Amino acid sequence: MSMFDKWHDRCMVARGVVGGSKAMMFPLSRQWWNRRQEMRRLWRADALALIQSDEQNAYYAAQRLAARSRALGDRQGFYHWAKVAAEVARRSSVAEMDLAVVEAVAAEELSRRR
Image 1 (spheres, rainbow, N blue to C red):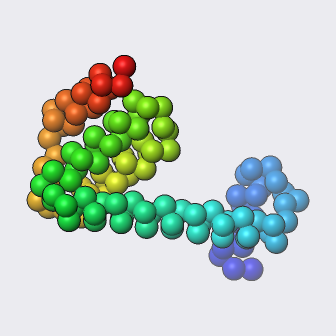
Image 2 (cartoon, helix red, strand yellow):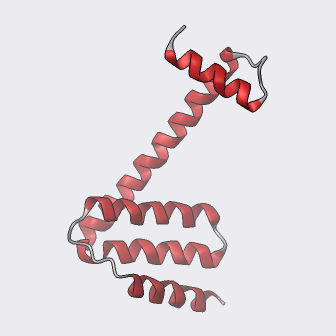
């Protein structure tokens, strides 16, 4: 029995799915993993596009888009742009990241939408 199988069995027991079928679990896990990888590619691509357009203000641009999505009630959009902002922070050493500016951007976007 492989290490993965042992881990999988422990997880199934912990979740109370002792009689669960591994044949059903792997395709679902693969689908989830593929979707997750595709989301990461999108975050990376959007972050690189913002960095290429204006590297110094790329983080603020992503935060502005996140705040706009939040103000519109778009939960998935908010999550996407927040992850893009995190990706910009990881990839760029030039991007400015001042919390006071981010709070001002968020307040401005929220006041526009009300």
